[in-house]
Amino acid sequence: MPAEDTEIFRGRAVNGEFAQLGIHNVSRAFRDLAAEPLIEHAIQRREGLLANDGALVVHTGQFTGRSPKDKFIVRDELTEHTVNWGPVNQPLSPHHFDRIYGKAVAFLQGNELFVQNCRAGADSNYALSVRVITQLAWHALFARQLLIRPPQSEPGRAADFTILFVPGFQADPETDSTHSETCIILNFTRRIVLIAGTCYAGELKKSVFTILNHLLPDEGVLPMHCSANMSRDGQVALFFGLSGTGKTTLSADPNRLLIGDDEHGWSHRGVFNFEGGCYAKCIRLSREQEPQIWNAIRFGTVLENVEMESQTRVLDFNSEEITENTRAAYPLEFIDNAVLPSVGGHPNHVIFLTADAFGVLPPISRLTPEQAMYHFLSGYTAKVAGTERGLGKEPEATFSACFGAPFLPRAPSVYANMLGDKLRRHAASCWLVNTGWVGGAYGVGNRMKLAYTRAMLNAALSGDLDNVSLTPHPVFRVLVPQSCPNVPSGILDARGMWQDRSAYDRAAADLSARFNANFEKFASVAREIQEAAPAA
Image (cartoon, helix red, strand yellow):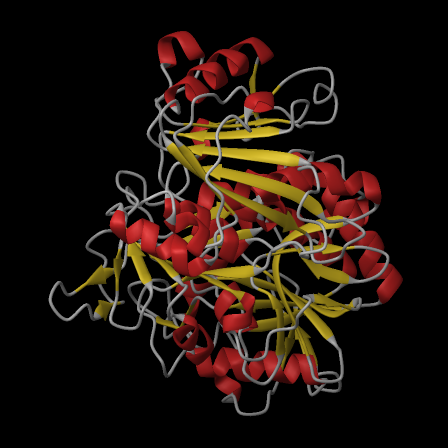
């Protein structure tokens, strides 16, 4: 693109302004371009194509998901005693970081760069300024749509953190102490994140989340991997859940106001979104089932790895040819009933979502505060074939502490204790909702109908279940409603939905044992939380 065109797009081509980051001899840097010129850059650079609805379709290449085994935190005086070191938080020495970073910035010499100055945190009291420097135009667009654009009144604010996204650079495992050519490295002392060797944009988003998970507990803010919405009269609900449990789908309710779909903080003031956009899974997306997400896919949206007919540019949301993990990234204002700025009061309801592929857990059940703490620390769902490569025919139980273990630099108990304190202080009701299978395990039973799940959630959030008779589940001891408006009563009985009740009992005992085995690592938690475990 000619240099004079940058003025038309209100970007500024600059040289030599990155010296403090060690970046030199950049051919051009485009700062804070809007979506339209970023899309034009992406198309001219052959990074993506426009679909018939105007969305930018990109392919992420070899990696269609995160690379958790390639994520590191620099271990130094600042992080030595605050980070929970282990398989999730892998240490890297300052020496090796400096070596890798030096090679990465040298790689950028002669390149064009795209810079977006963003924010993380809709509550200005806790906002983090983030400067994103990318090699690809579409990564800059992703950052612009997913994070928060700062007020025009503070364009010169120094960045609290800088993210350098260099997919073309590859590390050398033999000399750099990495596991592969890919690396995602967080340096809290230098306040730099380096992402290299992968084009998957979710690494950018989750790096920011990891930063906030480390910083905010010291400010009394609980960072949460959850979506959030609220009723027209301001009653806030949180939806915790791992990928595939319906967190984005269920929070995008046309009858409620969306605060955010994935990452939030809970402060003494209430709930606030960390982001300014949504990152929705769109495999098998349909207008009928998920109209809010469907209508958000338009010009300005980034679609990752979605198949498209080459001549008509019509999208095929049902195709898994590239990956099952197809994604749509769009700003919150693309949702008609989004709350802007995305803040709300203290939650009235907390929902834990699980896709139980074993068909054991009831479709909805109420939790005591102790059970809520137990299930928060457990973070259970079950993956099935098709959701991840390498999975066999049988369901695979997955436990991810606080429903977000890969993004927790601190020990899970830090976040769990904060949640327990806030639940008690604000008397929020807690529910466990199974969006997975009923009437049998995966391959035998059926996936719970979305319409029934929505009806159960609506009843819980509106208070219609407050006076309904509750019965303890015989194994998990959660409290199961005996009736629910607009839901056949038989569906509420997980055991009764199985034709072979003895087979259900065996499956329930097996899942209970999995829960208890996983919870052994939390032996130091309070006795009342341990006693909330399912029957052995």
